[in-house]
Every structure is written in structure tokens, then in C-alpha cells.
Amino acid sequence: MESIFSFISEHQLMIYLVILMVFVGIELIEKVPSVLHTPLMSGANAIHGVVIIGAIIITKEADSVYALVLGTIAVVLGTLNVVGGFVVTDRMLEMFKKKK
Image (cartoon, rainbow, N blue to C red; front, top):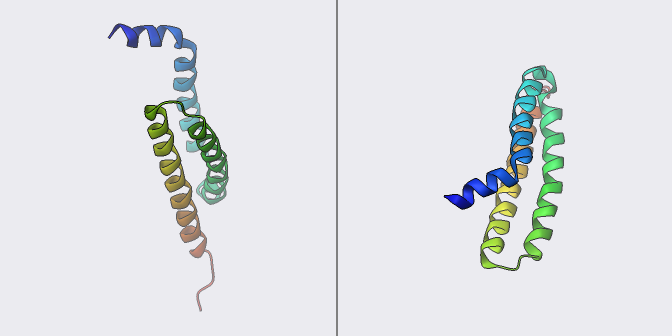
């Protein structure tokens, strides 16, 4: 328990920053009109592709089994997020095509 408190006290600024980013993200997404959600989702998926590259690099440099497992999980979940996002984007774009 003491290690958790020391981690929080050492990284207090980062914790505050993440909490602030969550609130700013929520406010920002609420203001986006529904017409722009598809391009916004495509852009977010492209950015998440960069996160996958970073997770692969970090996993390659892992020096313990714990770090290797966490890195592998990060790569798998990030890949699922990107693929799922592009599938949803493709389905939404199908709605705008003219039907025969």
C-alpha cells in the first residue's frame, strides 16, 4: 500500500494531467456534430496506429516477462481498436452511398 502512495506522490502532476485530458476530451467530443464523427473516428484510428508502433518498440526493448506481457497485450488491444474503428467507419460510409 505504501508503494501505491509513493507512486501517486511521485506522479501527481501526470495524474492531474490525465484527469484534465479526460474532461477536455469529453467536452470536445460532445461539441462535434454527428456529420463529422466518421472523419474524426478515421483520424483517431490513424493516431492509434502510431501508438501501436510505440507499443511494438517498447515491447521489443522489454527486459522482464511482466513488461513483455503488458507490451504484447497493448499491441493486441491497440490493433483490435484500430481494426474495429475502421470497420465501423466503413459501415457508416456505406450508409451514404446511393442504393441501386
